[in-house]
Image 1 (cartoon, one colour):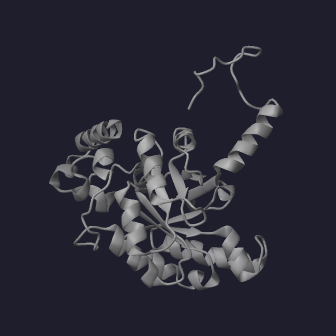
Image 2 (cartoon, rainbow, N blue to C red):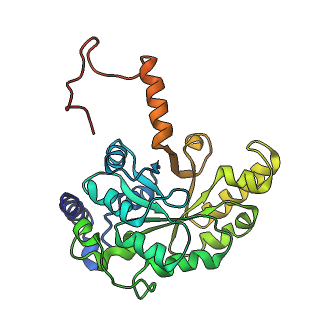
Length: 284
Protein backbone atom coordinates (compact mmCIF):
# COMPACT_ATOMS: atom_id res chain seq x y z
CA UNK A 1 0.00 0.00 0.00
CA UNK A 2 2.99 2.30 0.37
CA UNK A 3 3.14 2.76 -3.41
CA UNK A 4 -0.53 3.80 -3.40
CA UNK A 5 0.28 6.46 -0.79
CA UNK A 6 3.33 7.57 -2.77
CA UNK A 7 1.24 7.78 -5.96
CA UNK A 8 -1.44 9.79 -4.19
CA UNK A 9 1.15 12.19 -2.77
CA UNK A 10 2.81 12.64 -6.15
CA UNK A 11 -0.51 13.33 -7.81
CA UNK A 12 -1.40 15.87 -5.11
CA UNK A 13 1.86 17.70 -5.73
CA UNK A 14 1.24 17.66 -9.48
CA UNK A 15 -2.28 19.01 -8.93
CA UNK A 16 -1.00 21.90 -6.81
CA UNK A 17 1.70 22.78 -9.34
CA UNK A 18 -0.65 22.28 -12.28
CA UNK A 19 -4.34 22.98 -11.51
CA UNK A 20 -5.17 21.88 -15.04
CA UNK A 21 -5.17 18.32 -13.72
CA UNK A 22 -8.45 19.13 -12.02
CA UNK A 23 -9.99 19.70 -15.44
CA UNK A 24 -9.65 16.10 -16.61
CA UNK A 25 -5.95 15.67 -17.26
CA UNK A 26 -4.52 12.20 -16.67
CA UNK A 27 -3.16 11.08 -13.30
CA UNK A 28 0.27 9.63 -14.10
CA UNK A 29 1.85 7.42 -11.44
CA UNK A 30 4.11 5.48 -13.81
CA UNK A 31 7.35 7.33 -13.08
CA UNK A 32 8.95 6.03 -16.29
CA UNK A 33 6.31 7.84 -18.32
CA UNK A 34 6.82 10.92 -16.15
CA UNK A 35 10.57 10.94 -16.68
CA UNK A 36 10.37 10.32 -20.42
CA UNK A 37 7.80 13.10 -20.79
CA UNK A 38 10.21 15.42 -18.95
CA UNK A 39 12.99 14.59 -21.42
CA UNK A 40 14.95 12.41 -19.00
CA UNK A 41 16.69 9.11 -19.68
CA UNK A 42 15.55 5.88 -18.01
CA UNK A 43 17.41 2.62 -17.45
CA UNK A 44 15.91 -0.77 -16.63
CA UNK A 45 17.62 -3.81 -15.17
CA UNK A 46 16.73 -7.21 -16.63
CA UNK A 47 15.45 -10.01 -14.40
CA UNK A 48 15.21 -13.66 -15.41
CA UNK A 49 15.05 -15.12 -11.91
CA UNK A 50 11.69 -15.93 -10.28
CA UNK A 51 13.17 -15.24 -6.83
CA UNK A 52 11.48 -12.25 -5.11
CA UNK A 53 14.66 -11.32 -3.21
CA UNK A 54 16.55 -10.98 -6.49
CA UNK A 55 13.80 -8.86 -8.01
CA UNK A 56 13.52 -6.59 -4.97
CA UNK A 57 17.29 -6.11 -4.81
CA UNK A 58 17.24 -4.97 -8.43
CA UNK A 59 14.09 -2.87 -8.02
CA UNK A 60 15.62 -0.97 -5.09
CA UNK A 61 19.11 -0.57 -6.59
CA UNK A 62 18.43 2.64 -8.53
CA UNK A 63 16.94 1.42 -11.81
CA UNK A 64 13.99 3.32 -13.23
CA UNK A 65 12.21 0.12 -14.22
CA UNK A 66 12.71 -3.63 -14.13
CA UNK A 67 12.56 -5.55 -17.40
CA UNK A 68 10.93 -8.82 -16.31
CA UNK A 69 11.99 -11.29 -18.96
CA UNK A 70 9.23 -13.70 -20.02
CA UNK A 71 10.16 -14.17 -23.67
CA UNK A 72 13.46 -15.94 -23.04
CA UNK A 73 12.86 -17.46 -19.62
CA UNK A 74 10.63 -20.22 -18.20
CA UNK A 75 9.10 -17.77 -15.73
CA UNK A 76 5.34 -18.15 -15.23
CA UNK A 77 2.84 -15.37 -14.64
CA UNK A 78 2.28 -16.66 -11.11
CA UNK A 79 6.00 -16.23 -10.44
CA UNK A 80 6.05 -12.79 -12.06
CA UNK A 81 3.08 -11.76 -9.90
CA UNK A 82 5.02 -12.73 -6.77
CA UNK A 83 7.97 -10.62 -7.91
CA UNK A 84 5.89 -7.49 -8.44
CA UNK A 85 3.91 -8.04 -5.24
CA UNK A 86 6.99 -8.69 -3.10
CA UNK A 87 8.16 -5.06 -2.95
CA UNK A 88 5.28 -2.81 -4.06
CA UNK A 89 7.03 0.31 -2.73
CA UNK A 90 10.17 -0.21 -4.84
CA UNK A 91 10.94 2.86 -6.97
CA UNK A 92 11.55 0.83 -10.16
CA UNK A 93 8.42 0.35 -12.26
CA UNK A 94 7.56 -3.24 -13.28
CA UNK A 95 7.76 -3.81 -17.05
CA UNK A 96 7.27 -7.24 -18.66
CA UNK A 97 8.64 -8.43 -21.96
CA UNK A 98 5.79 -10.71 -22.95
CA UNK A 99 6.31 -13.75 -25.19
CA UNK A 100 3.89 -12.41 -27.81
CA UNK A 101 1.02 -9.99 -28.42
CA UNK A 102 -1.65 -12.45 -27.43
CA UNK A 103 -4.72 -11.58 -25.40
CA UNK A 104 -3.75 -14.03 -22.66
CA UNK A 105 -0.14 -12.88 -22.33
CA UNK A 106 -0.90 -9.17 -22.22
CA UNK A 107 -3.97 -9.28 -19.99
CA UNK A 108 -2.18 -11.51 -17.50
CA UNK A 109 0.82 -9.16 -17.51
CA UNK A 110 -1.30 -6.08 -16.88
CA UNK A 111 -3.52 -7.80 -14.31
CA UNK A 112 -0.52 -8.76 -12.17
CA UNK A 113 0.66 -5.15 -12.18
CA UNK A 114 2.95 -4.55 -15.17
CA UNK A 115 3.04 -0.85 -16.04
CA UNK A 116 5.01 -1.49 -19.21
CA UNK A 117 4.43 -4.02 -21.99
CA UNK A 118 7.60 -4.74 -23.97
CA UNK A 119 6.65 -6.38 -27.24
CA UNK A 120 9.38 -8.44 -28.95
CA UNK A 121 9.94 -9.31 -32.60
CA UNK A 122 7.76 -6.57 -34.06
CA UNK A 123 7.62 -6.85 -37.82
CA UNK A 124 4.04 -5.74 -38.44
CA UNK A 125 1.81 -2.87 -37.40
CA UNK A 126 -0.92 -5.36 -36.59
CA UNK A 127 1.17 -6.95 -33.85
CA UNK A 128 1.47 -3.65 -31.99
CA UNK A 129 -2.18 -2.81 -32.56
CA UNK A 130 -3.07 -6.17 -30.96
CA UNK A 131 -0.90 -5.34 -27.94
CA UNK A 132 -2.62 -1.99 -27.54
CA UNK A 133 -6.03 -3.61 -27.90
CA UNK A 134 -5.41 -6.09 -25.08
CA UNK A 135 -3.47 -3.73 -22.78
CA UNK A 136 -6.04 -0.92 -22.77
CA UNK A 137 -9.52 -0.79 -21.27
CA UNK A 138 -12.41 0.47 -23.45
CA UNK A 139 -12.82 2.75 -25.28
CA UNK A 140 -9.14 2.57 -26.32
CA UNK A 141 -8.92 -1.22 -26.26
CA UNK A 142 -10.63 -4.48 -25.39
CA UNK A 143 -8.99 -5.39 -22.11
CA UNK A 144 -11.54 -7.15 -19.96
CA UNK A 145 -12.08 -6.06 -16.37
CA UNK A 146 -10.99 -9.30 -14.76
CA UNK A 147 -9.10 -9.35 -11.48
CA UNK A 148 -5.55 -9.25 -10.25
CA UNK A 149 -3.34 -7.48 -7.76
CA UNK A 150 -3.35 -4.13 -9.57
CA UNK A 151 -5.87 -2.58 -7.14
CA UNK A 152 -3.62 -3.35 -4.14
CA UNK A 153 -0.61 -1.93 -5.98
CA UNK A 154 -2.05 1.21 -7.56
CA UNK A 155 -5.28 2.09 -5.79
CA UNK A 156 -9.02 1.76 -6.13
CA UNK A 157 -9.16 4.00 -9.21
CA UNK A 158 -6.73 1.84 -11.19
CA UNK A 159 -9.24 1.02 -13.92
CA UNK A 160 -9.88 4.71 -14.53
CA UNK A 161 -6.15 5.52 -14.70
CA UNK A 162 -4.57 2.42 -16.27
CA UNK A 163 -4.82 3.51 -19.91
CA UNK A 164 -2.76 6.61 -19.15
CA UNK A 165 -0.11 4.74 -17.17
CA UNK A 166 0.63 1.61 -19.17
CA UNK A 167 3.62 2.09 -21.49
CA UNK A 168 3.89 0.24 -24.78
CA UNK A 169 7.42 -0.57 -26.00
CA UNK A 170 7.73 -1.97 -29.53
CA UNK A 171 10.97 -3.83 -30.22
CA UNK A 172 12.44 -3.78 -33.72
CA UNK A 173 14.68 -6.81 -34.19
CA UNK A 174 14.85 -7.33 -37.96
CA UNK A 175 15.11 -5.40 -41.24
CA UNK A 176 11.38 -6.00 -41.73
CA UNK A 177 10.74 -4.11 -38.52
CA UNK A 178 13.08 -1.32 -39.56
CA UNK A 179 11.03 -0.80 -42.73
CA UNK A 180 7.90 0.00 -40.71
CA UNK A 181 9.57 2.06 -37.96
CA UNK A 182 7.68 5.21 -38.96
CA UNK A 183 4.35 3.37 -38.93
CA UNK A 184 5.05 1.91 -35.48
CA UNK A 185 6.01 5.31 -34.09
CA UNK A 186 2.80 6.77 -35.52
CA UNK A 187 0.59 4.52 -33.36
CA UNK A 188 -0.66 6.93 -30.65
CA UNK A 189 -0.37 4.48 -27.76
CA UNK A 190 3.25 3.50 -28.51
CA UNK A 191 5.59 5.21 -26.08
CA UNK A 192 8.95 3.73 -27.08
CA UNK A 193 10.37 2.10 -30.19
CA UNK A 194 13.33 -0.05 -29.17
CA UNK A 195 16.25 -0.88 -31.47
CA UNK A 196 17.28 -4.40 -30.43
CA UNK A 197 20.97 -4.15 -31.22
CA UNK A 198 21.95 -7.83 -31.16
CA UNK A 199 19.00 -9.21 -33.08
CA UNK A 200 19.15 -6.48 -35.70
CA UNK A 201 22.69 -7.66 -36.32
CA UNK A 202 21.64 -11.31 -36.27
CA UNK A 203 18.79 -10.89 -38.73
CA UNK A 204 20.60 -8.46 -41.03
CA UNK A 205 23.96 -10.22 -41.02
CA UNK A 206 25.79 -6.96 -40.22
CA UNK A 207 27.74 -5.92 -37.14
CA UNK A 208 27.61 -2.68 -35.17
CA UNK A 209 29.85 -0.15 -36.83
CA UNK A 210 29.41 -1.49 -40.33
CA UNK A 211 27.75 1.03 -42.67
CA UNK A 212 24.84 -1.28 -43.46
CA UNK A 213 24.09 -1.84 -39.77
CA UNK A 214 24.38 1.83 -38.91
CA UNK A 215 22.02 2.69 -41.78
CA UNK A 216 19.35 0.47 -40.18
CA UNK A 217 19.78 2.14 -36.79
CA UNK A 218 19.71 5.59 -38.37
CA UNK A 219 16.46 4.79 -40.14
CA UNK A 220 14.85 3.79 -36.83
CA UNK A 221 16.34 6.81 -35.06
CA UNK A 222 15.08 9.33 -37.60
CA UNK A 223 11.59 7.85 -37.92
CA UNK A 224 10.98 7.58 -34.17
CA UNK A 225 12.24 11.05 -33.25
CA UNK A 226 10.37 12.64 -36.16
CA UNK A 227 7.16 11.16 -34.74
CA UNK A 228 7.94 12.61 -31.31
CA UNK A 229 8.28 9.20 -29.66
CA UNK A 230 11.05 7.86 -27.43
CA UNK A 231 13.91 5.73 -28.69
CA UNK A 232 15.23 2.69 -26.85
CA UNK A 233 18.37 0.59 -27.01
CA UNK A 234 21.00 -1.22 -24.92
CA UNK A 235 22.57 0.63 -22.01
CA UNK A 236 25.92 0.44 -23.82
CA UNK A 237 24.53 3.13 -26.13
CA UNK A 238 23.74 5.50 -23.24
CA UNK A 239 25.67 8.74 -23.69
CA UNK A 240 27.12 7.47 -26.96
CA UNK A 241 24.28 7.63 -29.46
CA UNK A 242 22.19 10.80 -29.61
CA UNK A 243 18.43 10.60 -29.23
CA UNK A 244 18.22 7.41 -27.17
CA UNK A 245 16.46 7.81 -23.80
CA UNK A 246 15.15 4.34 -22.84
CA UNK A 247 17.78 1.72 -22.04
CA UNK A 248 17.97 -1.95 -21.12
CA UNK A 249 20.74 -2.87 -18.67
CA UNK A 250 22.16 -6.41 -18.31
CA UNK A 251 20.57 -9.25 -16.38
CA UNK A 252 21.01 -9.96 -12.69
CA UNK A 253 23.45 -12.79 -13.46
CA UNK A 254 25.73 -10.52 -15.48
CA UNK A 255 25.51 -7.77 -12.85
CA UNK A 256 26.36 -10.33 -10.15
CA UNK A 257 29.50 -11.33 -12.04
CA UNK A 258 30.44 -7.69 -12.67
CA UNK A 259 29.88 -6.81 -9.02
CA UNK A 260 31.94 -9.76 -7.85
CA UNK A 261 34.81 -8.83 -10.14
CA UNK A 262 34.66 -5.21 -8.92
CA UNK A 263 34.60 -6.33 -5.26
CA UNK A 264 37.63 -8.58 -5.67
CA UNK A 265 39.52 -5.74 -7.37
CA UNK A 266 38.73 -3.40 -4.46
CA UNK A 267 36.49 -1.21 -6.59
CA UNK A 268 33.40 -1.46 -4.37
CA UNK A 269 32.84 1.06 -1.57
CA UNK A 270 32.07 -0.97 1.55
CA UNK A 271 32.35 1.89 3.99
CA UNK A 272 35.27 2.73 6.31
CA UNK A 273 38.41 0.82 5.41
CA UNK A 274 38.97 -2.21 7.61
CA UNK A 275 35.47 -2.11 9.11
CA UNK A 276 33.31 -5.11 8.19
CA UNK A 277 29.63 -4.37 7.49
CA UNK A 278 27.21 -5.62 10.10
CA UNK A 279 25.42 -8.72 8.87
CA UNK A 280 21.71 -8.09 8.35
CA UNK A 281 22.18 -4.36 7.81
CA UNK A 282 23.21 -4.58 4.16
CA UNK A 283 21.09 -2.78 1.61
CA UNK A 284 18.49 -5.06 0.07
